[in-house]
Image (cartoon, rainbow, N blue to C red; front, side, top):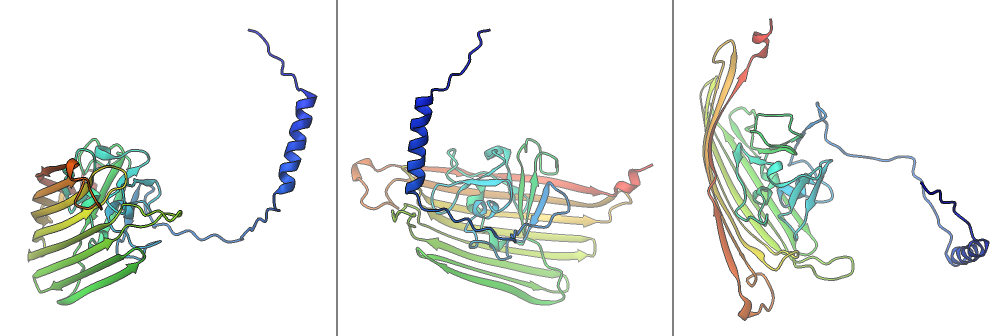
Length: 332
């Protein structure tokens, strides 16, 4: 192997030193500020790979307009942005089918093969009660192949005495941002009813250089959940969700002119079945995704000679049953 001995040229070093000193002489003195305290806000976790979040809690910098914007505040998540909303969530560099998103137990995918409408595009975070993130493939409760993890958005009925409760929020921001959420729950001796309404919209925003970005959107949804407690160990629940939306995208030549979703399902929970089986949860559901993309309805002065429109639909449905066991009964 040939050995190479580096040779330093004194003339070159001298010229570099003169140029470097001249450059530093022209710059203003650099002032460094050091603070003694740093405040970090992170969700409290019982296990390192499981995170449980409250989507109704205050968020920074502003409440999220969709599921991906909500998840990007979780360590390990990033978002592939397309415009003002409907980004594609990425967990530790993995996305798509490696990161399934479940809405109240429903596993479904968007209608666009180019990820114009990932599952989180149909999520209105503040309308849910809890968000669970399972990082990595450790859990098998939601199927296999989840190499990145699993995200679960869920509604939960608050433990209330007979009565009515609810919460609402309104948010106004720059570039025409307007969000409104209303959530009401009524509980009787055996029956309960929960409804949630959301609306979110924004105009095109401007970047730091003052350039207007093609990114406006408008989204709205309605959720209705009703249940009946047959006895202390048996509960039946029905749910219906409908949402509408449209979004302009700056990263491609076409926009999402229609994001329509309609879902309905039923759930049965039976507890104290045997000394071994703690409870069994059975669920059946059906969803319909209607997605339309075009290059003219959300754009200013489109070329009528180049109009293009495409439509895609998705009809996910499923049936699952999940038992929960008393593991101590299996221990010797």
